[in-house]
Image (cartoon, rainbow, N blue to C red; front, side):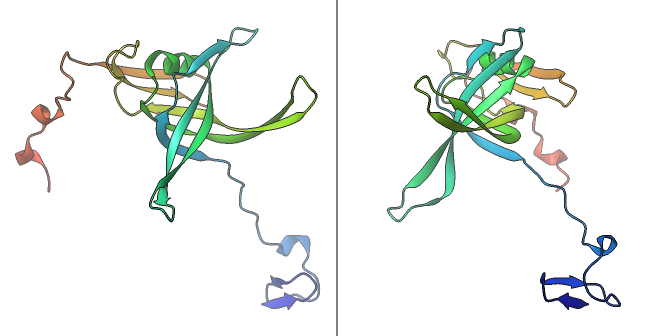
Length: 182
């Protein structure tokens, strides 16, 4: 390998001088992917565009995995935007305080306020929202555990599981420890 002193790039052995276009290292694809797990700070706000497309906004409170010098955990409040059928599902099943998982991409957009100032907003555009727990009783929404998925083609799929009258999950009744392979 030869080091090109002008650029600091190493060239394959046997090449002289500057690196030609056919010997440049391949560039890795750029990635804009966000995965979050947190609790909603308020019920999702559902609106419709002028063309009738559903859009929901909510904020996730996500604890950082470390504590500060006083031993307190810091929390980030992250704005999330969800589109189409998935937005309607979020508005129907998510409530303030419920835990949700979001898989999406970061978007930075800017707008101008009424007094002419430019503002920038960072928000996550959700490709997939997982409802990680049942809605709490008395929250005004149906009590269900559901997954909302808005694929690349724009179709939505949701699975709802009705809960019983008891607050506890009955998963233990279905689990036979003698049948586990380990």
